[in-house]
Length: 228
Picture 1 (cartoon, rainbow, N blue to C red):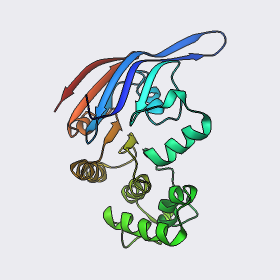
Picture 2: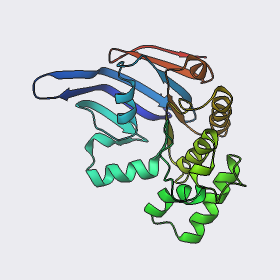
Picture 3: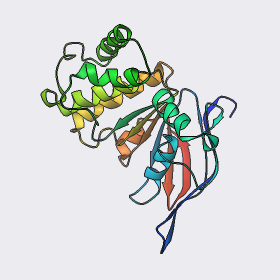
Picture 4: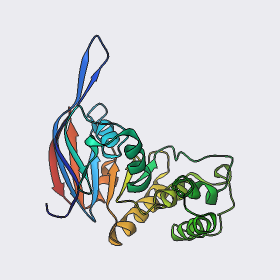
């Protein structure tokens, strides 16, 4: 795949507790092209959460290679890994992971603040991103004043703050009702149509059906890979 943004080869992940070793991933090969909307599915214990942590550079593989945008992330130090997480991966989590004591705008500003963006620039960008996800009238609201669907929209806006290479969503509709979940998936679809690379980790077949490609994982191995 010549335009691959993600390239994993023979990825293995072993957790060593001292008494027992658990092989969570058993030689995973995965390529994702720029501009794909891909769903990674599988039952509990299949290895999809481990795979998500590796894709997001939250953890490193025991063996194998992972190139993100041509850079082998297995060969970088902790500081560079943290920089990659901040600048190249936009995270969206099931639990939203918003700070409850600050506004929606300030939550969206956080990655830009850590990235050293000037205050006026990051404020303007945060407002633009919130408008983009339909929350232009909620910029000053704290998460406790928002619905679950609105909080996830804030999280999506935050994930776009640093113009990342990939958006990585972990069960993004898991805490939402069906209507809000459909709305959130529509935002991901719109972002994909605009050229974004979106990777969604989900156990929800209905959500997976709306992706352009579905990768199923079981017992630490990819068992199927197909396009909708």
